[in-house]
Length: 320
Ligand code: SAM
Image (cartoon, rainbow, N blue to C red; front, side):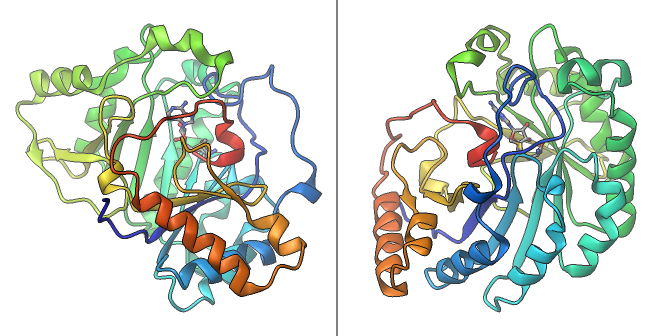
């Protein structure tokens, strides 16, 4: 029986994205969902309200790219009005964060995770599809300046693509109050299987960093995630490892996921979900919807061993 409290909800607010990362939403993938399929802000807020009654206290907005959805600050305002939600955060590629950071902070966004897989400007386009490195770097500096706390950097490494930047990323945590997290790649759909041969295990990343900077110190990091966190001696920030493939952390998992089309999942890899959009638009009563939600949470509690995983899903729709 899993004991962790389910208090954290990740919401994919759109499947659209303004980047074309090789491992997530490359140029070959063309189609987006029609707007009518995507939950409205009011529907999302209604769902968060119901989930707050089951114990959800923290919400993260993701996608797709959350900042390409128009007036995302209106959604944050709506969620802020739900008194039992204590924290709202966002995962973004950072392209639009620089220009939206102030308004987001003003309406109550507290924390941001910015995805960045290279610190080399010329390499950024190869991995992400467009040449926007400077926008992202500028956004990270703005986020630090206006006091998002913490500002985390999400990095995925691939052999022969960016695995020569391990030390550069580690140094970011020395110079800035940044929480650099190395996320192990997991292939989500058959089309990405070729990237599996470029997989870089976090065990190796940790060894490379410790060889250069000495043994890690343990670090306390604000957050909800499965990262194992450390600090290089004298560093302003920290380094975290999310061992997507090697680590089994179901027993520590406190999260649910709401996809952009309104499906609620107990786990990213779960084939099981409930269609909250259909229930809301089909005018099911609140007690009936709550019954379905409680049943899903009960199922999650029964994941007492690594569950059978399904990999045929799109990160941009279900939300990374
Ligand atoms: N567009 C936003 C961004 O780039 O951060 C939010 C959505 S993105 C899907 C969220 C996170 O999932 C990013 O940090 C991304 O690197 C990560 N991600 C996407 N596909 C992944 C995969 N196959 N394995 C591990 N992480 C993945």
